[in-house]
Image 1 (cartoon, one colour):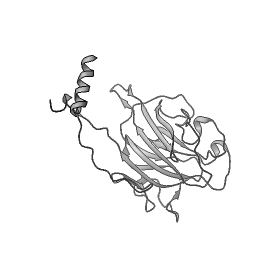
Image 2 (spheres, rainbow, N blue to C red):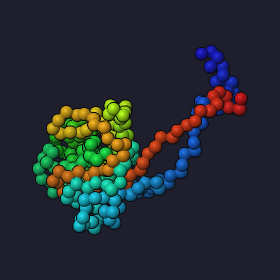
Image 3 (cartoon, helix red, strand yellow):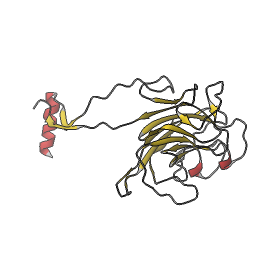
Image 4 (spheres, rainbow, N blue to C red):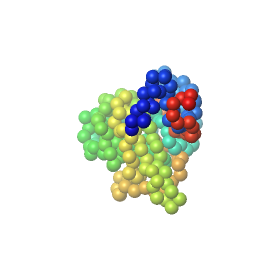
Length: 246
């Protein structure tokens, strides 16, 4: 401990950075979008122009404000794994029903194996793990940051897919962070398995990339401005450890 302290002190006095033994690649440049617009490396899934990225939207209409009303299950043509997802949605302005019967939909990650709940949770009590921004039937959001019915809301979701060994056992579980209308409501929450409604939570092995699904539970929920980014942790290489220049 004394030797380490001396080395650190000498490095600070001499102005030398202490090398941690890992050489990192230069991070690629990504240009941020303005407001909720996608960054330069994002894949746009819906921008108010067409449904080219989706299966299931045949003959659907796009509204004047660039949104659309869900009439059935939508699934992306492309598969995704670890990702950053931005979605904007609005529950019906005219309130009908209560609890799970009000503005119910869902963001289905990995072919809907893992659902982030979409619900009108503004003055609408229901079971906590079923309200807006919950990991459905597993974990409620930390707070309820829902806007009024009919107002546009945002989800920014950072998802890490689970990994499985060859025999189907879980090597690492899935994790999700959800920012609802600018408020962190899920903070690297562990996903316990498929988000079933009517049976116990459990994992089944699946590929590391699967389609994204906008689910449908009979309510006319609207969506717009959907984009996604593949995310990948940088990989460092072994390098020198100790004071720089030595």
